[in-house]
Length: 312
Image (cartoon, rainbow, N blue to C red; front, top):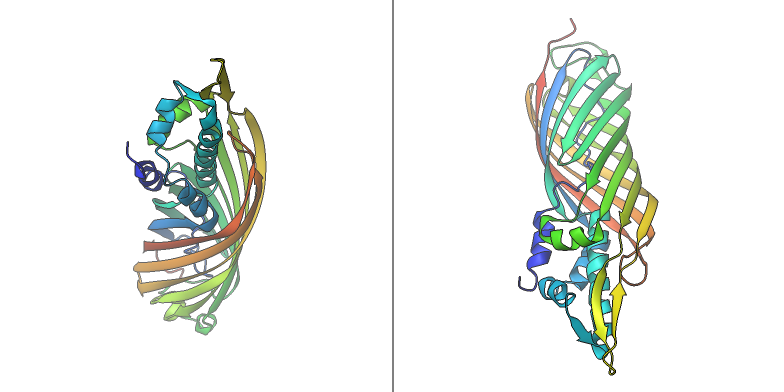
């Protein structure tokens, strides 16, 4: 495996790791008795993990793994440990907030006036959410009333998602040694306002708002020997990674905007959300712990289909 290949593999194999944090709903909930089916292509661009990945881009990980099975001179121990530490930080940072994209499928139903509920699948992540509308009319595009002349809508949502995450497939050699276990659970609370286009958003809507996301991550590793160092007297010493078991809580704060464009049944939905988070101190399986904080940009492109009749 040549240099940079593992970085490419990292980027193209993380679709199952991306948490569902794109916000594509408007401030108007799905009318009672109506359905919405949606698909989205979502991307996750995290600045802090990107820097960690870039710092390890010049390391030939295949050669690093192969060299761990044979002894190296003591003079190389510092360089070997430094390379492994960079690889460890890149892998773990990327699992905390991946670089890459994924495909989402979602379905929503209006369970009552002012309330709808939704289910979303994004790679390995499964999410369920509920949204409450506190501002604006409650009908669909076929309903005409004085209340529908108001163009402003507002709602607040609550989404819970969970997933198990593993290292990328190309890193299975490391994974077999690490016995890496990683899981995350997210709670997302978006406050959404929208301005409707057409009667009851029949043409679409322009939406924006703020969001809070709470993440609980649990990860653990088993120790493994990453190098054998031979001194001048021929004595060989094994360098071992750390055993880690940790649960990490992270809060992130964001803003978002999206636009729903279409007519009556079919809509095209471009969206973008930006989050800031301080990941705090993370444990590395080789070398010292490290810290991260930064922005994550979550753009998405989606299609939405509305199914249902008017309430009149």
